[in-house]
Image (cartoon, rainbow, N blue to C red; front, side, top):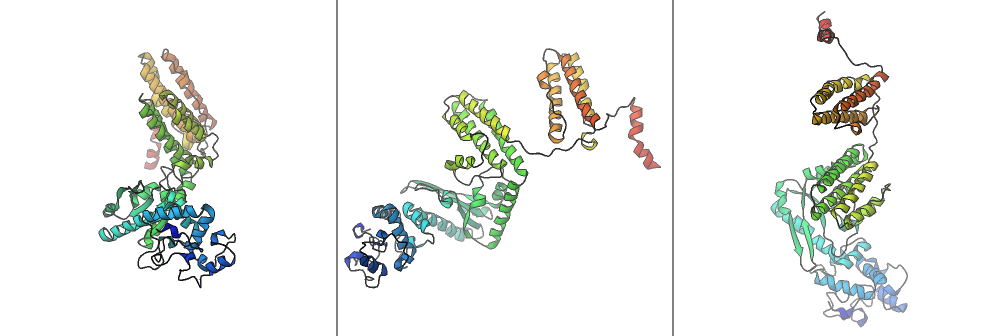
Length: 475
């Protein structure tokens, strides 16, 4: 780069021009286009040294082309020195101003969007990304020509949220196991950035479409830059529609509940160790599951990276501020404080994740037999446990009844009531009375619907009644 030659009046970089071996730049009077250059003549006529000094939004002459227009706009925003610094850095990184054999065209000409060109000038990363993508395609064509279905870009490179040290997130969709030869990982020492060329099979993508987590940007937002044939695009579109349908349906509540249950599992693990490192790891995993849960509950997914997580959570308008609680957990310096913060987060999330569910009205079809089941399973076992002074059996039988009551009340519009707060480890006879009162309360639900438990004076009466259908069929 001949930095001293600077920038031409129109915005082109004389300092990088392939013709600067025999031309000393626009203002030297040696430029072969000096006589016909509309921008040079206009700027001289209006007493400007460069087009970027003019305040008008001019696109005449060479400014109709993306490169000089983009360079001019860049200088208006950031200054000529900033442009020269970027061009010099990019040249060292391998960005080519004029490609050999292509005349005056190069890497800065490969844009349709001026903002994308400006971003490329600032980072020099687009060319690296393009090189990586082209390398994947070239390798596939040689080693596994039928394996590569398509390539998409997602993450910060697609959203415009990248910076000079951002890596490249690629959806490299492969048709078969031979495509795994495309996977790789490497570090570019000259820019100190690591890259992970990760392959995704159709099965993996379809698994993502089940929405068991909320990090679905790869599935939904990948910008396709290579496609082997239209059938791959059609299949991708079908998978996307399936996932979108799930997020719009009530099935998303089950997915949110699954993620929340995983958070509770990590919370439990945080209580099984006193290691600060392990407790922090459990807390981090629990936080991620909770974030997934609230996003999925709202039919949303994370579109951007970790640094934008709180921004995306704010859009949900939650009744509590997860950022404050999560930040406190991260800052916590003791196991106890981490657990305390995690408990608060789980409780608030649990209160929020109330699954809107239409319960069935009580009727013989859904309640019939449930009272008899309670009676059969645990009534006499409760009495037996009291007679044998068996505290464990008394406790477990009462817990089983409690769980059955809760399960029924979740599905059917009946009273839900607590009994375990009345359990007495010192008085097992009292626990029998607790059981009897609970089943008596439940029996009232039967009677509201005009139902009564089936009772027989003897097994013979049962047999006769039970086999009526057999006798009638015989006639």
